[in-house]
Length: 83
Image (cartoon, rainbow, N blue to C red; front, side, top):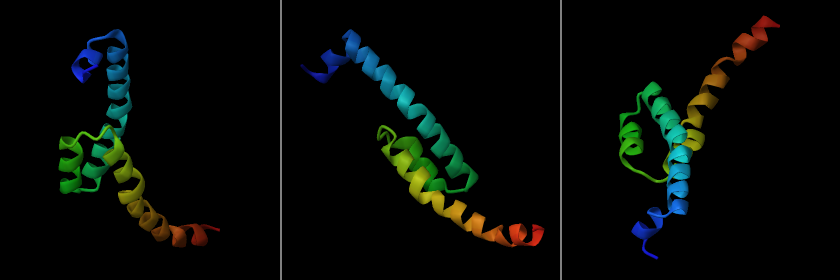
């Protein structure tokens, strides 16, 4: 069955809606993180390339995660001083 014919069936519609609902939150969160970190290249890549959230998940958990690790190291002095 060709792909076009599949998406014209009831199951095809359900799959399409599921894929859209799966991708939107990941894309939105990844775009938000890229914008907050001022990473214009990542923002454009995530915005233009449709990978069913694979690129977005990679960005969120591997690229943007380094920034969180660096920020946590910076606050260690505050936690030690507060005790």
